[in-house]
Length: 408
Image (cartoon, rainbow, N blue to C red; front, side, top):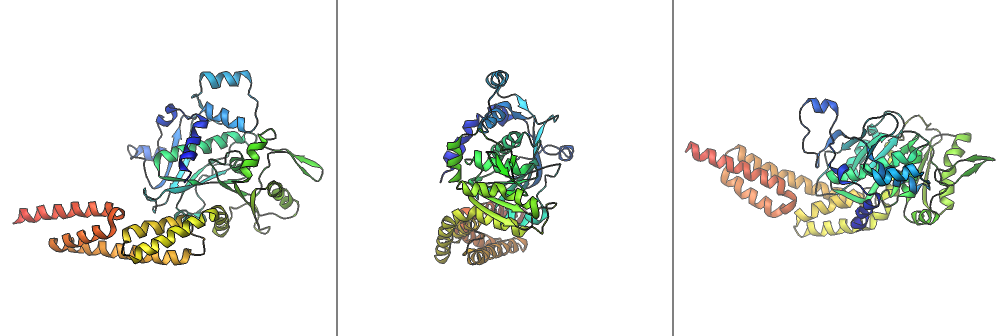
């Protein structure tokens, strides 16, 4: 697995200890309710806010675009690299996080980072089920100025680092979604930084590094001076999925970058729905197509996990089989074996829940010997996977035993 190389790539951007230790907090409403809980492995909706992004990350991201820094930029980079920097007139930088209740610390999750114009930051309602099905954490933030895509790009990089500090992440599955001004950012992220962002879902547009010609008019590229060798290397690693919802000339313009990337050797998928329009986010069925394209390279590994999980279950090693099947479905939920894997997983989950219910029923009835025997059998059957529930029930059994001795 390439996780070590991937996270070591973070050092390229020189993320400072200052930034990692900078105070982050949830929304103002949550602050009014009291101190923020331990952020590690937190599920649900919340915001992360920092004083800004270290200048060095902005500077080094712009270099990937072929930017030539001025002397003043270089001096700032050398003297105050950790200076907090914000886009526009904002005083802070924030990210909106949505973590499915199904998230587990022992199952590394992927990230789905969505960048769009305006104040929209929440995960589209129709996409929420996919977060759980694909074991994805959602990160949303506004795209900012179209002429400064590198700022939102750097913000996405910092978002990956912030989430890596809080969650178990699968570095292979860091995906971008871009809409409106965010389409250019998402496109650039997977082309210029494939170590971070393996794939992008680009809605109603996109952009190419070099200038493109459309009916005699020039469409400026987002990085005409970028390193050409790096771009060629990215073509072997990145998956780009384009969604078009327009027809006529808008359709031609929207799909022009897709055609250019296809000719350049990138893995390109086009979802062409001219009747959809460009005012609303694509539906869950369209996201499913994109995620299938993103994760198809992992299906071989997922199939191996699925087959191994089935064999473990057949040998009675249910505590090893269940997480194996969960992992298989995390990166293979659209694979041809997914239906069978889901059925076996449901069978194991039902057995797990039923055995928990038996122990809890014995406890509720005061049948402590029976509860202890059932708990021992549960621990043997589910091992590390059931550790949290085992610890909880052992504590409950201990309290019930002490209470019973007190009554005697």
